[in-house]
Length: 284
Image (cartoon, rainbow, N blue to C red; front, side):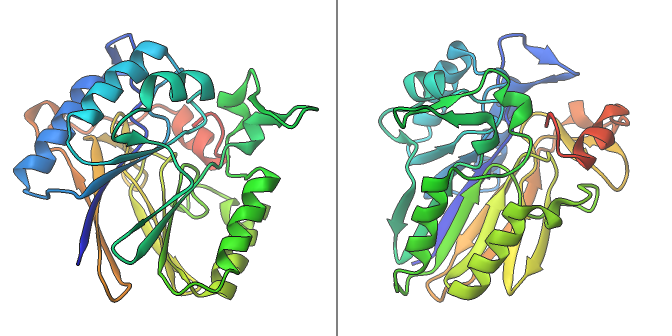
């Protein structure tokens, strides 16, 4: 059986309404309408982080209602703009979940929390967000226990194909200078290459759709549902999402889609801070 999955990312739901010329809540409603109009009918949705702009409880509560109304499981990952306590308390429940993995029709989906740079392990072993998590967790890093768990999973000898989801991309558009040289990316490349079980990796964070292959594995980034960017043209583009099809033979197809709506007819240039920020993957 083929599994249809929609990935949404970097929604930045907030209390302010329009922000930087985009209303995140309106954009998400347009995305859901676009999914319906295309007849994609996902079996599940994966939301890969920065779901609220500043970790507001009311934003997560609104988002919970919208996700729950989809009528399919929604698997959520936190981004650097998300904060653990309100994320868990106000977003999760029922069909809206946050788990480390799930098995679906012969596939194993693995969800990695890549925000370790913005978290700390206390003396009693509990994990807490740092006050400046939003800026500190600017690129991917796993907590030691998560890295060990993932390594043991890959070494466990299973045969089911694995799809990895996380917020921060190991690979992205070339504007993200130096990303592939980061220790996390090099570690993940090694783990993927040696296991042979990982058939794809999908992330968000950079507000841009991109796809490339490394070590025989495709790496995707997802359009932002709030402020999506065309790095080649230097412009703001309509909000978007990704559609995936996971086949029984272990192959994966993915297409990025953008909302077709008259209010996005113009493609204004994005602010000067965008390339500077994303070149260092900071504050994204």
